[in-house]
Length: 244
Image (cartoon, rainbow, N blue to C red; front, top):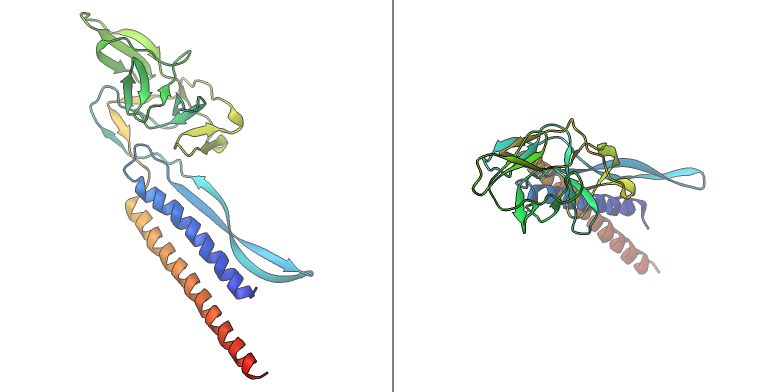
């Protein structure tokens, strides 16, 4: 394969992969507590017979930007936003413990869950909440309830708040984060929440649109160059055929 064609094909492939990631970020600009993904591109040398043959770009890895998004008020009792670093521990639909910062909580069949249905973990498992007139969540994650006919709030359970090292986390296809090696993170008393608020996505719409335009142009440049190489190769082959 022609070296220049190989490099252009590689560049087009990397641009396409980056476009997929950027497009997904843009689609989640309004998703609660969404964390944007980015890519790391590096130069990669290819050697042949001891001599440098060519250098092409390589999409080395994808990583998550854990910068906190803006917190906005909702005045909803079951909405919580993590104040600083940390996560809410949940049981994923597969049964594995995962971690999220999306604190729009619900009560489904008497169990505290996330908006997307994951079970919120408490001291010893799922948090069961009997029928109540009002629910309150304190900064340390303690869930209290005022039951029907009562005037006082009583503790029900405490949300498992945790703060694993982000380097040990990987994002699942369900947007939850999981510890490498199927481990679980311990409760961290230093993690607190803000009740009546939610964290927004950390995706910048303007910055992401700029990246999208730039990557689209890069992809077009690579594909146009590939077409030019193919056309030139065809013309050369025609000339060679005439000379036979």
